[in-house]
Length: 108
Image (cartoon, rainbow, N blue to C red; front, side, top):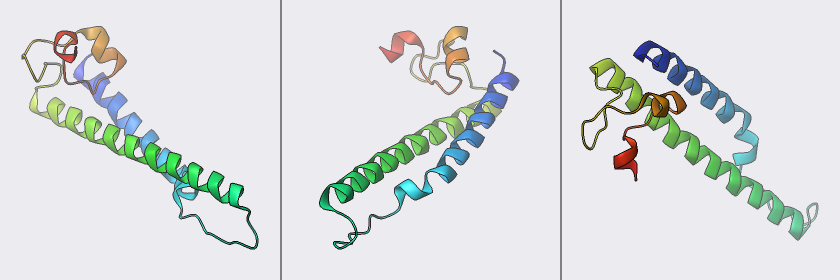
C-alpha cells in the first residue's frame, strides 16, 4: 500500500467515524429518571445503553486521533516507519491498519 492509498483509506474511515458519531447521538443522551413512566429495570437498561454508547464514542475519538497522527506522518514523509526502532513497518501490517505506528517486533 502506498501513501496515497493509505491517505484515501484513512480519510474514508474519518468519514465513517463521523457518521457513527451522528447516528449514536441518541444513545449518548442523558437518561431521564422518570419514576412514574419507566420502571427501575428499564432505567438500568437505558443507563447501560448510554454507558456502552459513551464507551464507543471514546473508542472512535481514540481512533480519530490515530488517523490524524497517521495523516500527519504521511504529510511529513514519516508514514510506514516504526516510531520506536525506526525500521520499516511490514506492508501487510499497514494494509490491515494504515494508522499503526509500530512494527510487529516493537508492538509485542
